Image (cartoon, rainbow, N blue to C red; front, side, top):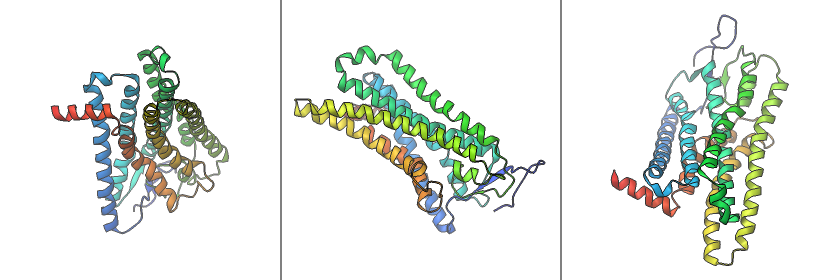
Length: 311
């Protein structure tokens, strides 16, 4: 790896992402595995976007939200995985100071937006199951559009304060981040001076978006499950449970890994399992989401078949 580089003021001008320190052969193997998962993730989510776009039957609020969720997954993995792949086969493993801040901002903004989209999808299911007669009146195209705008803008605006605070932190060396991306704790650990105020502020902001969206989703699904249990028809109960199970599986994948990483005791320890937990929600979650959420859906499968047949 290259020696520490600083600018004329003595501040760090680039960081070194340690990634996965192992033998060259293992790094090549990881490069192949992660590349395949990345390409499959792009293919899955792009297929969903194209299938919904090509089928007028699926031009409904739920599928509009799912299309945006799939597009978010494409952006999500593309904000960190290409750099991780490049570093796996590179000897330098470097990222510029500005590039590190941008990667942090875009990755975690889309992480926040994912929580907001999961909340919007739970609201849609709440209306469809608990208020079926009012669904078309409440969930209009106008409201759906505003929900999409809110989720995208909310995610990116939420992370403006943390990235602004981090940009004020002095970095004068060392510059090696024991991670494969620019994450909060390992980045602040390289500060020249203690920054407890910034650490606390960033931690509170991150925890707020996690807990607020998670509690909202739990509340809506508590109402949904209460309604489903009172459905007299066995077939109706089974269909509603199937829909809820898919969404709850996606929610569990995302929030389970995020909370282990950022809320559990010892979340500042980035050695061993913590790095792989981050890898799970950064790479595996966007890969599994389409399989769980969309490919079990009958209408989506029909739309995908028609789209692939046209191709």
